[in-house]
Length: 313
Image 1 (tube, one colour):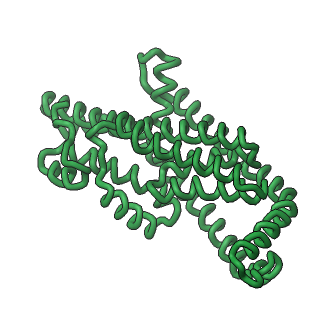
Image 2 (cartoon, one colour):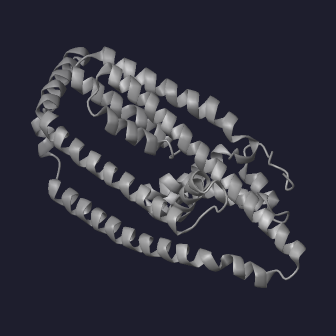
Image 3 (spheres, helix red, strand yellow):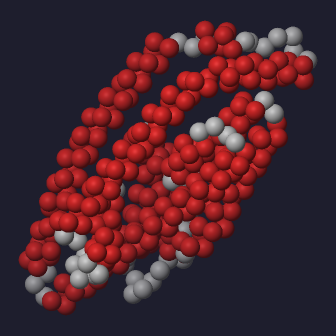
């Protein structure tokens, strides 16, 4: 996926800077790499700043949460609920910290391997055209193969572009609501919503629940909570169920059951990273399968209603 994003950015820079005369070269690849590094650095910096701000705001959140628990005791008629201190005492921080360190170490190790793979892919792609020359000696077969590969690439790029655009729109609209209400760390939550939008169903739920809970704890009032919860839910529903399906078209209409199964499968294989990549991987697989007559029936089974683009489109 990173290799594909680098090439997509490189082609975009090629269209802007070279006016389509050459889609990619060393300059556009370099600009794509620099763009990704700059964006990644900005995101890391934002996360670090928000961690520091959370530490400063934590005492106020604790006081508000204790007030909410006291009100809950009155509303429910219970004699007593556990205090914040008692809840914290029940949490075993030792194993949690060990698991966190192990997870971070694994992420760093995987990042190194991913960068190595991406580097080899960027080197290998230079010889792919020559391989096609030797693989298809008939010019007609070579032309039809290039057309098919171009069609597959176009469909994949369409999916990734639309999904990214919809995720960006969801994040920006959510940021507007969070900023209007005055929820802390609005930019961080907007970025989290942008990322979680790539995870089907579960991501949308998490993206709505956590900012709403923070609004409840921060303001100790039900009105900001209701505004955030209703607003974010409305945005998720509008974009996820109305706008995005219209832009995606019938060729990318995955079955909801397939989406759920792919989420479970890739989540069990790669954890959270697998959840993020589950739908893109499945959509890419369906696009590839749909472009070959022998595997097209499998793509039909993966689709929502069986309607796919014709092979000649």
